[in-house]
Image (cartoon, rainbow, N blue to C red; front, side):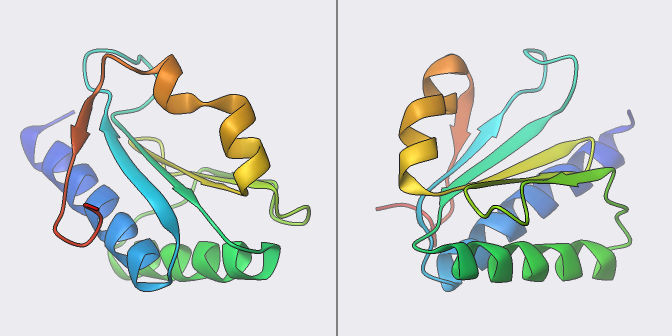
Length: 123
């Protein structure tokens, strides 16, 4: 991956986090997994308040990605609305409900990853 592509991935991860914050999602975390995961560079993890809000946030993040010229590799969990996963290869977005977020605890699994902060997601 080139430096420019990596900068684009970081920019998209932070944009997705900012969008989620503007949609009243909570516990938003952006993890820098470069050098730690062979599969992706960034995780964006957030909690929604309802399945409807989670799907709406998913749709808006997907629209933002299209505007940036990014192609989604996969999407899972949209119909159930408990854990929606958006895979953009270099950025993977996890939109959880509270129960699934606590159960899977991805932050603990990737506890050694650097957390990126934006003024919109810091509490």
